[in-house]
Amino acid sequence: MITLKQINYALSIQKNLHFKKAADECFVSPSTLSNAIHEMEAQLGTQIFERDNKKVIVTRSGEEILKKAKEIKIQMLDIYKYRENNNSVANSSISMGIIPTVGPYFLPLILPALKEKFPNLNLKIIEGQSSQLVTKVKDGDLDMAILALPFDIKGLLALKFWKENFFLISHKDEILNKRNKIKAKNIDTSNLLVLEDGHCLKKHIISVCKISTKKKFTMESSSIGTLIQLVAGKMGKTLLPKLAVNQLVESIPDLVETELDEPGPHRELAVIIRPKYSGFKSIEELIEIFKTELKKS
Figure 1: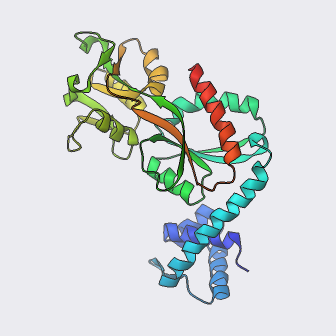
Figure 2: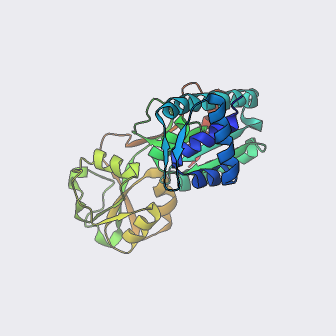
Figure 3: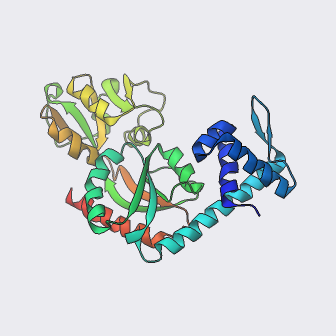
């Protein structure tokens, strides 16, 4: 009989196209993984992978088998989650993905409350970019992920729980006329600092401000923290969501925040899950905690 462990091994090989990398990912020796795959292929009576010393190729029949295997893996995980979460989130084990433009500003607000209310909750947190997290949730590698919308979630279910607007962050010495709000058309984008490609925040800013996608920016960073330090050093200005403003900007006296005067919300935070995820009750309980703690911020 094919086991869930063999399925996980096979799916890891499909993802990495490398036996050693798959073995490392599964925390087993290459020989253990290879033997398990050989046994799986023998039981199925067909070859799933073609391999030599240089490369691994998924066979045509292997593609069909692994497609079914992925469905089985997700269904089995949901069965385990149903049993585990049947009595609420209190004693659950949940894997949660979160994007880097949300995690550092969101987690400090909600983790103390989660620990107090659910001391036995085993929460595993994985940080990654939106596209990576969508894939992990879809493949059953994560129970849930926290993303900033709009974003293509590819058939997953989005449970929105927070709305926020963007703020222009400038150095006080570079502001001629201080104002409470500013229109996007009045922002000089010649020295606008943004995150590098791959971060959905950059796409959201370009969309809200109607900036050409062909524009070349003076500086692109991999982190919001770096953008803030560049603004503090009078290297330009940037746009940030309110959660980041609350924690980063207000601690630096030389920085000034000006709300972006464009129709909002400029982005929404949401939990994404598989539509048939059996731990839905637990996710609802978590979201209530999220809402309560965010309102206090």
